[in-house]
Image 1 (tube, one colour):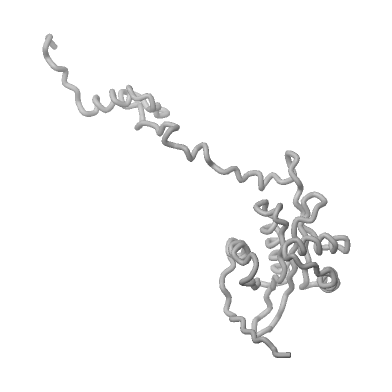
Image 2 (cartoon, rainbow, N blue to C red; image 1 turned 180 degrees about the vertical axis):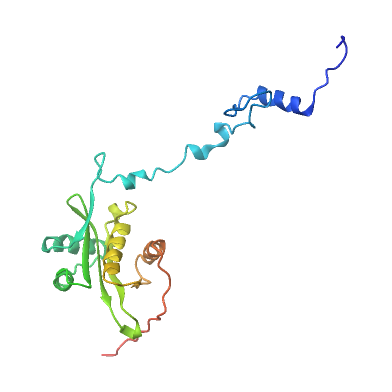
Length: 215
């Protein structure tokens, strides 16, 4: 090639030179030759999601690294007072006699009746109560959850999910294939609906009707 002539560059050679000059390109493992580089890699400026991933592994490490240990177990008589206190904190109404009565009926570990508590170390973090009911309104046997409460400080730590899964497991062991509950339109209905839907629950086949009775 004499002076003044322009060197011919093929399209493949042109791309190879562009990629070789790019500060963001990286070699392809095992590749050889002039096209042994890949397309430009995404620089950190354009991949902020790599630095913003939420670390959910903490929920799986409960009990390690100094975090509290989560335990789900049947309620005992010693749990009544913390249950009364937690319920009063959530509902602003103290109902000690009501909870003592429920413990008397559901805390006996009788088949088909379950009163479970969630403990973070030695502190009550929540509880769930349910039973197997059969042929009410023509419904075959199914599990009913009629109480679920989680300490606000224990939310987003898997307490509610572990309680729900625990009672579902007990219902399943008793031959039940469906679980139901009701959610009040008052109070923290949005949070409860979001939780139960996140557990796979959907609208059921029943419609509730009610009427005020005059004195």
